[in-house]
Image (cartoon, rainbow, N blue to C red):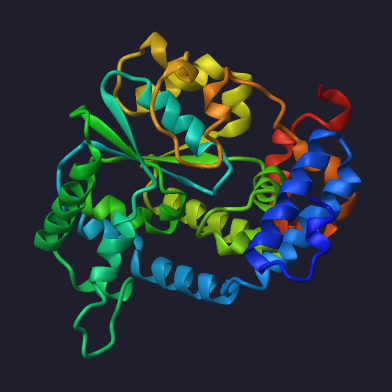
Length: 341
């Protein structure tokens, strides 16, 4: 593969694929310096192909916070569709959301689906035919209970095609829904919302190590990833402030070190009786279409904790961006390279 990436006739997509594959191959051999070389080169080339503006992300989040005020949420406290079947799993990619989905989908009353696009589809529907140019999120301020009920029903209807097992609950594991928690709450007030969270350094570097099939354009630059995590933290802090108790935060590090208690906590939040099958999630036979598909076929393990430390000498840029948050996560620093097998 190293010979192939030196060729001049490779398309960028093929070259990036080879670079990430080489990085993983050297990482598996514990040659972390060589692995970093290829991770960095692959990400740099992929970033040049992506259209991502971190300033736009911040501006949109500013608007969401402005619109979804405590007053708006209290005014519409009794609005929305009462259907309790959805379980949303949100967060950053590579932060344990697939593991949470697999645990819950191992319950007899819960069906796993996929990373569904329908929350975004519904928010974008508010942008249509507006001569005044008012779009989501500002358009939400004009809506009333009838609209929220209808949009909640639209969401349920869209998801129906994915619910092939007819179970009482289903999971929508689209991590990018986290800025829309307020909107999800207004249209589906009885849905469950679970925030899959991971130590910032581990979460961000795990994204950087991953070549995503599509989407996640912020993951190919360390500064972009760090700033995106800051925005994620900002939004989740805001939702906890204006919707206290509405979202369950599940810390990946606690799941893998205190597994049964965290499983019971998850099930209790979802109003589900405990089932032993949730502890044996790796035996559940269902399609998993995310980057963590192999990991959720294994019993719980701790080898991913603190993996960023293998590359710490290269991550000063990321550390600097995340510095305002790191003290909050000190207890989840993870296992260092010298402690892992």
